[in-house]
Length: 204
Length: 204
DNA sequence: TTAAAATTTGAATGTCAAGTCAATTTTTTA
DNA sequence: TAAAAAATTGACTTGACATTCAAATTTTAA
Image 1 (cartoon, each protein chain N blue to C red):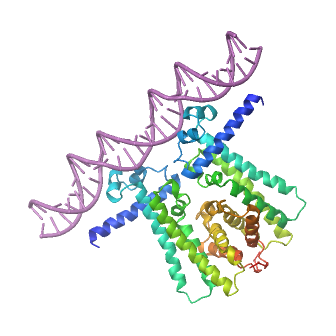
Image 2 (image 1 turned 90 degrees about the vertical axis):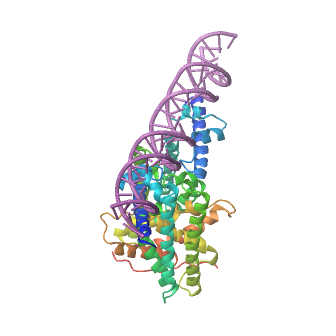
Image 3 (image 1 turned 60 degrees about the vertical axis):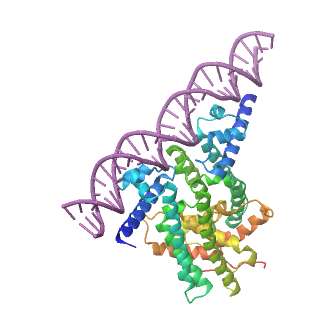
């Protein structure tokens, strides 16, 4: 990649980030290309030099986020650990990723309203890939006796677990919070119970 | 209420229901007044005889759903039962309500993109009211020893619990499923663990 | 039956924002 | 430094859709 291309790529990143931030405030349809441009002291027209259209601009940022999520699994799969330790690590990574990219993830909730069919399919494909990796982990935990889940309810349990986590984008706010690490520990403590419901002590 | 008014009220219900169904398919912004009208064999213009505008049409249906949810609590609060039994009942009612009104609830996820500030505040007010009732129930369950939650983590736990449930609107589909009652039982079994993590037998 | 009220119609209006593009300015490169 | 390439501009086009409204039609009630 030439210097020129690197600069252009950087500008694309900058635009995507800014766009996501504005869209987080005002929604996809509430955000105009004009809004995105002016925040970066550009004009609407030059956005089209970097992106084919508004859809593409936003779509690329979604794919980036999803690939980062999949990257977490690549990391965890290399761990020398049992299913429970791996799942705990995934819950932590998922939580942190979500908390720091709340705005970006919100667009994934109803992609139908925004993207083309091909784009939606690509998003679903990556989401499915991510979800399946949880299923593998749950199955592993059932086998080694650490998770107490019925085999034919794995998908339901995975959805409940990811639901508890993903819903954070609706209520969590970074402002005025103690550090994210502590927060993540609390989340993990309760969420892990869905699959491993033994009594654990809670400090009052 | 006169017969005339009853008929008009019924028509309003009919329009709201149809609108919600179409919006569930195509999204709020993807659904035109034309779409809503033609599905009911009306013309666009007459929708405005029943509703001030598109926003109001959709807003009213949201309020209706939220009031139904609050109604569940009125029912449960009258039960002669302990906190655990009440929470289980609420999880059941919440699940069923969501499953049968998936489409309607989806619009509540990002009200910022759709409604006016006053409308959003009203939606938040009702949601808050609903959430607080869970907090009361959780506190009650801590006191009587059935729930194992730290007092200062109640809100987090409530959000995780409601998140696990609400996320169903993303993945659950009524098609090709056994009856909802059985489904609800499975959901309850796992979700209750978040607050009450004792080992329960799972049939394999 | 008929006048009043309720309802429906569809054409017209207005707004808003996405996307285009030829011309201009800036940056690179040789 | 001069030609070429890259980047930016902003005015313009276009289409979509919400909303309005006067006129027509249908329903109600006396």
